[in-house]
Image 1 (cartoon, chains in turn cyan, yellow):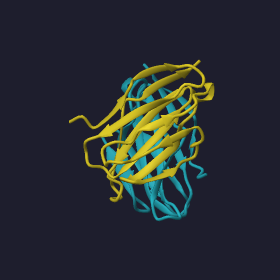
Image 2 (image 1 turned 120 degrees about the horizontal axis):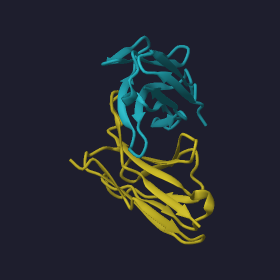
Image 3 (image 1 turned 90 degrees about the vertical axis):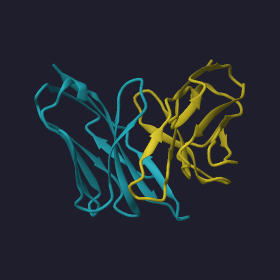
Length: 115
Length: 114
């Protein structure tokens, strides 16, 4: 079983604050790292996919970085807004012994932005 | 575009009953996945498939079976339902081969076993 860990598990921030959270994953057999945004009662929606060590991706106020050598990714939200409230999932895509990709999700970081 | 369609959305089963959760995608994706999400927990992979006729176990396969006879469909079978299988089930698909391939998720099936 692959360990994909996210921290913190939950987070409350004031509107306007910037915040960040972490996803750690195995540094071997890396294929890609995904971030998803998951609102309550909906299905996860893709935010970023990153494949190269040192990758940085940005979408509006949200950005992410990737370090495959040490096995971590950071997600940053600048100037948090109430609509950013959601669970942020990371997913590690690794290659298994059969040469197939396998996707393992972290438990998620539940963000609550307080107006 | 339909994307990933799961049926049913909700179901209540009695202990020992069987049922099949349906998942269909119309994006010609090779990879399909079944996850379960328990309260306060993340998504746990039950089974996945890398193409028609090829399936493999995930982290929590016990009590479930899958088949993949076509590219479009990936049904999940519960043979003897148990209360521990009460969960929300998500099906997902991705094109798989490309590194930048997203996974698209269905809306989920909320299953209660009583």
